[in-house]
Image 1 (cartoon, rainbow, N blue to C red):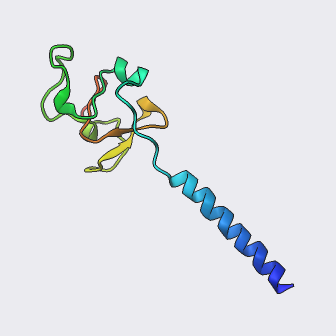
Image 2: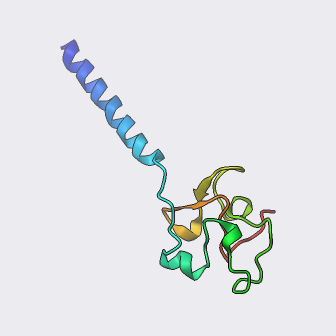
Length: 101
């Protein structure tokens, strides 16, 4: 009987580990060609923003210091509510940039 009980406990622990892994798996990166990203002028490298098309862009603005960025300061990538289920690059930029206050 202890073997059966041990099996059930291990099965539960294994299921939790698998479920936890799925929850904590990193979301994919948003592609610049993604329709939402393209409409917002998203660039994974903010230094490549077309400054004539986006005159509001200013040096030093990037996803990492945007109010919408859900990663930690200095993270290479993080979630953004504008791109549900996808991450943006920390040094990236889009026209929805809002300075973190």
